Image 1 (cartoon, helix red, strand yellow):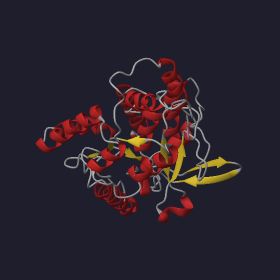
Image 2 (cartoon, helix red, strand yellow):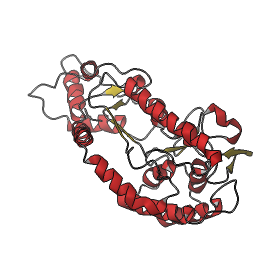
Image 3 (cartoon, one colour):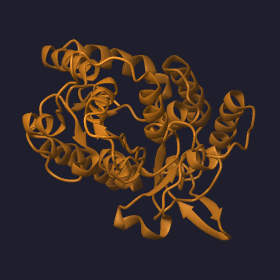
Image 4 (cartoon, helix red, strand yellow):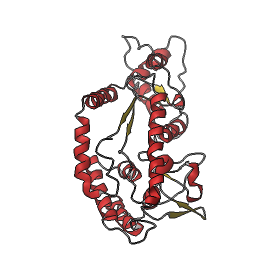
Length: 339
């Protein structure tokens, strides 16, 4: 159900408290009644109905599209039914990409596709460009989408930098029948494999990659156990009281507020160099202490560099030698160093 959370926060733009309330409504509505069928334990129609009501509540449009290029860039993972063993998810995005684009669909369809895991809900077929593709959830290959997220950052924010990355786990999947046990084990192993891969990738950095996951007490609580939400809260709070976890949370908050490490997104695909080297690559001298004025020029530069047009943004400073081009550039870099 992580994809549903991503949609609530990213595509619908809900505040955390509203997202928690909406998630509880969805979980209770979808999992409160089991089917008699042995193929899927729960009714996809009930899940669709409750998700539709949530989408309509916050967008005033039950069939609102997943696409939202001007909003928070969000994606959810879904596996194609005819290619399960490959473990490579399709990304259903709110934004456009130039290659390997996912299906264009409604928010409700995206939510159903990412939650249609075998054993829980029946698959969903999405028609895109006249071709129907069937999806069976995004957990196998996308339960920990950190690697996919970093790859997306590299292709969407080509010239940007990253200071902090937070990965939040959800414990271990609780299989609901014999058929899904092997899948559940594979999902759990895949999630842990990605976590270990990310730890190795950022092993030489300091205060950049943070992973939090509540393990103890969550083993027997799955997405279907909506009535155990108080237990989830209790175990999470207990977990955060552990000294090493509490210290790591404080460290993460300070790193996020400070944001003084700058890693080019182009480097996120491999082993990240030591933090001190990354900082050295990004540092530049401050402007002269006597620098004044140039507000109009600085405003024009900001408008050019930070507008919403995709692609590389270039602003040319042209003038005679000694006119102050370098100082103007240094002042701009200082003013917008965190962007």
